[in-house]
Length: 189
Length: 189
Image 1 (cartoon, chains in turn cyan, red):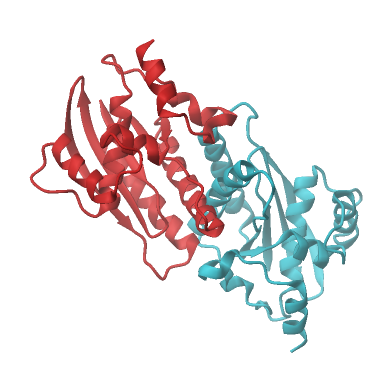
Image 2: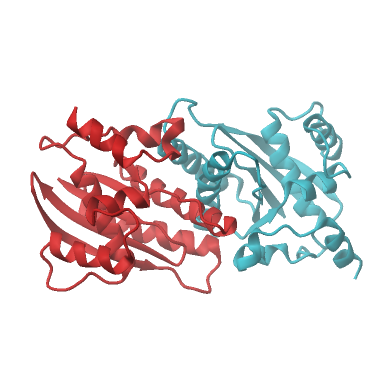
């Protein structure tokens, strides 16, 4: 099973694809799509969509996992990010791939074991978990791999999602975070 | 000059195309893209993007005018709307069209003369301004035509934008509203 993780951003959109079978996981590819800094938002959206579509066609993943939106202080930044996220989700759904989303704290908890982990801790854990020679850079790529690994950790050995997060985007409550405690309970049951 | 107005919405995205030459304006087409109500957000985004792309190819407009985001009480709705808006802007830029945006109050002021006008007042004025036999329905279509007309009113006879709103999406301050008073001053100068 191939999971394609995405960490959307208007300047840099991180991506990372992993192959997952039972307890084993290996890196397929990772990187970041850098939209021209001085470009207009429409232009950035076009670059991100185009590059993502071509990456998805090359990697042929089974599903796409995206970092969900968090409430930042700067409303304008969040709105801009939501525009990018719309385009990211569109690219995935145009490739007929299911989209799942995870909150930043869930992702960090799944990878580092602590919801408020620092960026370099995430990079360090990604290196360990995927048996890499060095830490993945830029950190957007590591964050994208973290989303993919978070989804892998939520899968049962048969490949179905334990916490039904796959259905989250299809529900009106899709934008609410599922508390990690809740996930743990579901995994035990 | 053909202006294609869009009023983005996750359930219904209104569109309206007008032809504008100097002081004259006529309706080309209008309507609303209704995404299946029970569909997931990714599916809705796919439907909206696909239909818009085909409409833009048919109408062959010169530019696209989109209603900008307003700060609603429900943050989740605004975020959802921003996802749709991202896809709408992408469709326009993929068709190599410039995108301009106007705040709801600016649009109403340009069409009705009052920034807090009701939906039926907008519909009534659109009917008058475009010399239609009946009011355009649904109201999303009327709102989209209002964005297009608002942009037409901001154009000089030579077809350039008076209030440089065409550049708004390319600037970091693109998401701020330009006060109608400011527009008026610029138009006089």
